[in-house]
Each structure stands twice: as C-alpha cells, then as structure tokens.
Image 1 (cartoon, rainbow, N blue to C red):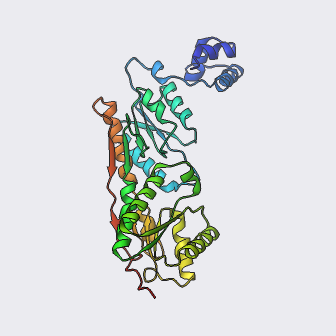
Image 2 (cartoon, rainbow, N blue to C red; image 1 turned 90 degrees about the vertical axis):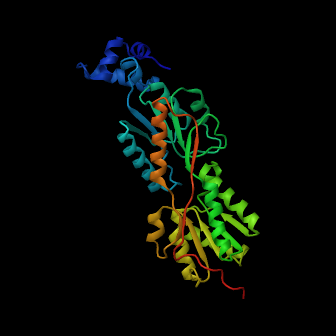
Image 3 (cartoon, rainbow, N blue to C red; image 1 turned 60 degrees about the horizontal axis):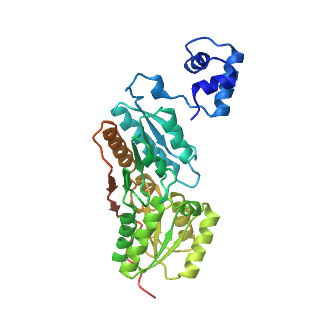
Length: 337
C-alpha cells in the first residue's frame, strides 16, 4: 500500500506538505497542490482515516458497494440503498456509496483507506471475486445476496429458491402444465448472479417435482425483443398457459403483446411476476406477484453489521421467506381444446 511518505517523495515535497494538502489546514500554493494531487492519483494513494484518527476511534462510516449495472433494475437497488442509509443513520453511521463495477479493487480500497468501519456488498455472484478478501480481512461485512459458499460470511437475502418454487406451486395449483419463464438479461446469468440463478433453480426443481414443463428465456429489453421471445416460446411450446416474469422491464411489453395476439389475461394465459409491489399494482393488469422486500433487506443488513461492529454479531445467513399476493393476472388454466 502506498504511504504518505512515498507520495511526498514522488511530488518532491515534505510529508507535512502532503498532509496539509489532504487536510486543508494550511494554505498551499496552487502549483504545489497540483503536484501533490497528481502524485496521489498516479500512485493510487488512499488516505488512511484510521491512522489520522485517535487510536481506537471509529470513522462511523459504512461502505455500501452497489454496482449500478444497466442490466439490473436500478429502482430496486436504490430502494435498498435508501433503506441502508436511513437505518445506518439510526445506528449513528453515515454511508459511503460505491457504485462502480470495481469488484475486488473496491474492497481493497475500503480496507486500505480505513475510511469505513464496515462494508455492505450488493449484486452478489455465486462465485464472487470479492469474497476471498472479505474472509481475509478483520473488517466486518454483510452481503445482501447469497453466494454458493457462505462459510465465514454474513448474508441477508430473499429466499430466491423458495420464490421460484412458490410461483410454480401457484400456477400448478391452477392447473397450468406448460410454464414459460421470462428472465433477466443474458449478462445477469452469464455472471452467475445469485438471485437470478437461485430463482431459476427453485423454478426448475419444483416444476420437475410437479410434473410441469418449464421453458426459460432471458430477456434483453425492448418491445421487439419481447415479440421475438414470445414468438419463440409459442413456437416451441404452443400449449404454454402460464408465465413467470423475473424482469421488471418485461412486464408491460409482455402484457401488450398478449393483448395484441388476442390472448386474454388471465382467461387464456396467467402471469406471475417477481417484482416490486409498485410495479405489480401499476401495470395494465394487476399482477399476481412475489414482492421484493428491498427495505427489509437493507434494514436487516445494517442491523447485522452494526451488531458486528459492536462486537456481538456472528456469521449467519438470513433468508426472508417469499410472500405471493394473488391479483387479477392469474386464474385457472383454460380447458384443452
């Protein structure tokens, strides 16, 4: 890790000058300040808040790592972030928001800088590259998500496997035998993102146990892409009468295309969504859905991190049980013609 002395040597100034540039406690000439700042950037120096503070004093900051990828539904991510922020304030912490797709480098930066007392990580992959660093450091952390191996980690998440199973159970109970799943963008599955993979596992395992046929198709986004996806589904499985949607951007294009094809919801086709409550109730047909408990996930993650920071929280996995709300979009399977 780069030290303040190395920055001073690189910039050709004293260590105290670098310290004054960082703290702003003394006036430094514009030329010297620019030279120091250039050295900081080139060397990748991160000021260590812990070293600057009194011994044993905390920064009272939590780092929230939330990569804002274009293939994920940002409103849900931000709802979790707001819940983390408000809960953190109630516990006396501020939140440092890291939104870049930096992976392990972001973890190293937080650990090396000492700016945050603990970390909350989102967008967790099954084999997430950040996990080895989390297991090695003494800095407390909590994942909002569930990797394949949870050893030595604290995780908070919706039980996505149970969510997928619950959607299949609902449609099976209504007599549907052929179900199509319209999923997240292909890149989400290529990264083996935990929530998407686990939902799909739950869907498939319960479909097998129930003797249902299930077809999964990722969805990139856009009306034309949905038209092509829907055409392929009915070409491959013309008897499809049930849809499970795990992609908020797919909901309205799907409903619009079904109407255009003369397929009534729920008389001809039933639709169940895994989505935020506001999406389910504001669509053209009120959706039967499993809500994403974004606020609860954010709140519980902070509570567990605060407990760790207070020295009485151990590693644990907290899975929130899914709840399915029946609305206008699901009904009995149509009688076979």
